[in-house]
Amino acid sequence: MKTAVQAGLLAVLAGATVLVAPAQAATIIQRTALCKAAGFSGTLTLRYETAGFDYRMLGGYTTSGPYIGDVAGKVTLRISYRTGSTTHTVYSQSAATTGNTTFSMPTTTTVPTTSAGSAAATFDNGTASCTATVPIS
Image (cartoon, rainbow, N blue to C red; front, side):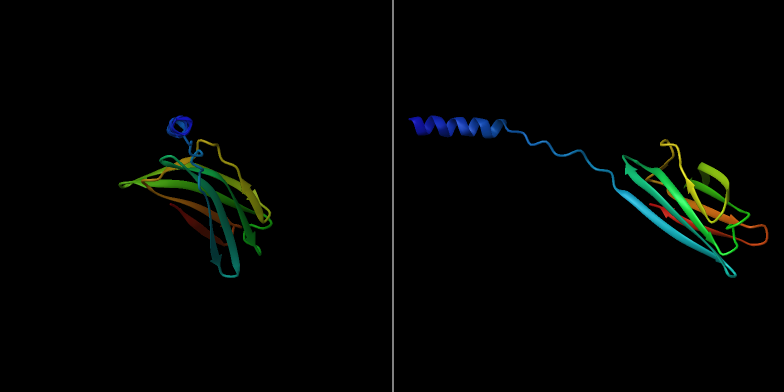
């Protein structure tokens, strides 16, 4: 009888045990693109994560040189997505650069996972320019 009670108690306890799955971790994605114009080049690296039905931007940085945007140039970063024939810009910023530039975006900068998104960094030193584009998907 004691064995039957213990077995029944274990069955009740086993039935009451609920394993809680860990919170779904976001997937962090990092993409890099390169552009070249003659002997010049620029690189864009973008970091973002999946957050429900959106990609949430975490930040980006650029490097450039020689010459293009490394001394007196500027870099412009534009993040956008398309819905049908409409392009929506969710972030745009221009900055002077000395070869390395870091972009911090508001945590509300998102691109829907159901749309075709991209981030484009245009490097310009006044005489030459190029654009590095990464897909957001």
